[in-house]
Image (cartoon, rainbow over all chains, first blue to last red; front, side, top):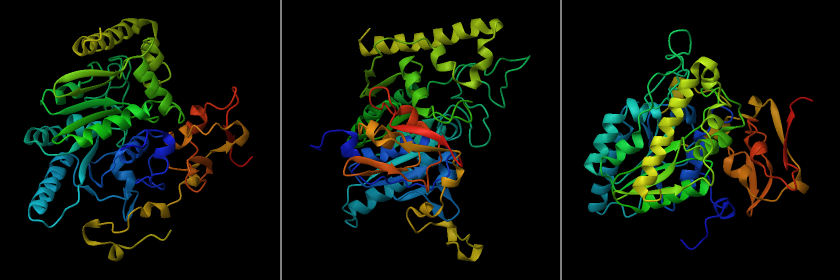
Amino acid sequence: MATPLTLKELSKKEVLLTSGHRMCSGCGAPIIVKMVLLASEYPIVAANATGCLEVSTCISDYTAWKIPWIHNAFENAAATLSGVETMYRSLKKQGKIDKDIKFIAFGGDGGTYDIGFQSLSGAMERGHDMLYICYDNGAYMNTGIQRSSATPYGADTTTCPAGSVIQGKPQPRKNLTKIMAAHDIPYVAQASPSNWSDLVKKVKKALEIKGPKFMNILSPCNRGWRSRTDDAIMLSRLGVETCYWPLYEIENGVTKVTFKPKEKKPLVDFLKPQGRFKHLFAPENENMLKNFQEMVDKEWGSLLKASGTE
Amino acid sequence: MKLKGWKDVNPGAVCTEAGSALKFKTGSWRAYRPKWVEENCIQCLFCWAYCPDMAVFVKDGKMTGFNYDYCKGCGICALECPGKKGNKAIVMEEEGK
């Protein structure tokens, strides 16, 4: 543990997700997985909900994972991994295994916020010693950009298309991080790949805590967000700096904002480079931009209040 | 890479070879190629950290080039590269030119 957290030190470790996976060019998810796996000092066993990450890292007989990895179905990554974790505890009790192994489940927002929600909620409630990581790209990107409950307000998707009837998704996104915190689990955090050291520190911290942990990580998707292939990190940084995606953690009920931007940028800075919000810049949709900014301000305000750093 | 027939695949589609995706070279997807300009490189390793394809070679904590077998040419490394005195150490060039 004495080694300082620098990219130079991290780069000396083997990345346990290999090249040759078939995520799109410029995808945010493999960057997140790489950082998560590098953060761990322990052997990892992972489960994956169905989603972009699952289908493109394990196609047919070719896997990009260098760790034991299991995929079951869309809705049950958390349930599957809780079974694996229970088996591990049993084997340990029987003296058949003595390694210290950590368990991580990866799910997209579809497999976490919507389809996998009940199994996630159940695994957290049962108190399994595992970390669930949601890489949130804000829609069902794998199947062609359908809206999910993580899709932000006003975003254009193929099932809430901006047109003459609606102007993108009419509903705001569900605040899953807060919902997970309401499970009263020991650790819940929100992170972004742009702030790599914050992300790595949170994963390290989560792995040292016994019990169920949840992390929600912003994962830019240039196909679904209708942006450029090179802007995944830039957009996730703007998400953080505009407080659309605040970086915070809730440890044993205590909220702590882990990054407070020096100057909170206006939300439009985050929305403007993304084609999915293009229609919001039409003069008749000015009130939507205003509403959206108010939602972001409200959440940021409540976070600052909760963390006592107002 | 030779595709397997159904008889060659393990029951339950179990993959027994870790990291076998390395046999699939994604470099052919690339339309733009990152070029490393060593004199402008400050060895911040952001390119390595932010590469979605693990296609940046690092040896003993120093960036040494790109793995063009797998680089998909997204350009994140070039955009995030701070460079030296405003000059980028990674520039994107169109393939085939």
